[in-house]
Image (cartoon, rainbow, N blue to C red):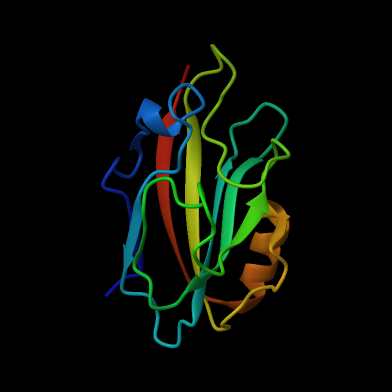
Length: 154
């Protein structure tokens, strides 16, 4: 079995629906995964755009996702806090999800949704940290990684 990340909203290497972008409702898409490695205690997730004109732009980060989970619902993180999820400060300077927003006429951008299976229950006790710091910390505890790529252009 292979650790796999998917979304019922879009297929790998296919366009992300407008609903999940800055041109739509700007809410996170639903995500689901299967077959995490044995020993997985939690997960960390980031979304980044390596096609951004100024270099890789980080749109979203979550950590301390419980190891028993196999999905994240649409718009997770909006509304009252219901679990111990840590949220990343994205490169927009905001806490939470910031959907695709490539410059108009810049061509197709690729949004990499990266999910790391971790060997620790908590990545950090901080309620928020920069998305890049989330991934740097996750790499030290990663026992597996799954990736889903969505595209978007304006």
